[in-house]
Image (cartoon, rainbow, N blue to C red; front, side, top):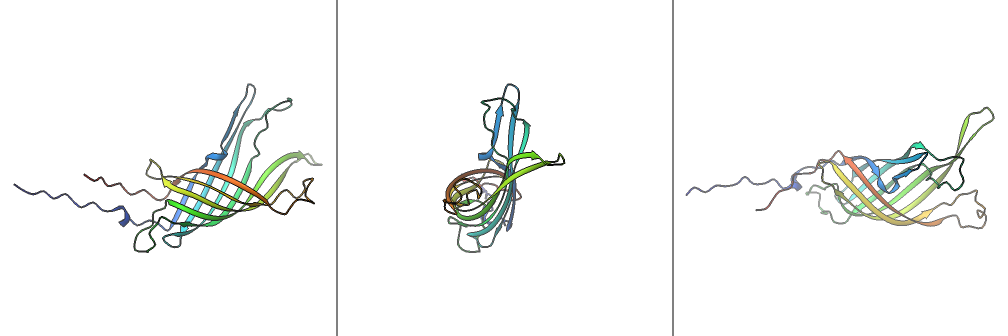
Length: 211
């Protein structure tokens, strides 16, 4: 009888991962669609991010997000539902992946469970009005915040698909022009939950089957 040897499978950890991970996708927790008999409204929250792996367990990241509004909102009717306010936000922070190998000999995968500290600022468009010369003017509000997050970033069914789920608590600045601005503390405690789906420049390594 002739012995047949199967070729050794290359472990996924030997596939080098880029230090810089580029991501583009949607922030699904901000997705909104309102159908109406006479009008409709859609908010499509796009998200762009980059993450640089400094060490196998530690990375720095930055992201920019914007709500793209489409459709026609109901106007001139009483009792119309309140529509969400389109916003733009930027953030930067650091992540610690506690389930990654601590040695630099193993290649770090761009997914895993993590804790993060993130500083962000959100610009929300509150209203629009016309100036003296008939030009449209937008009134906005900038809200700086600092959050501690716990989440997980994992690969999806596709070769370049990632999903990022996190939640946490933090502090954010209240509106400076509110009625209680003189008596309220300079910071409010806030919570957030985020679910993002990305296409990334890192292709997933092929999974090996064990027979």
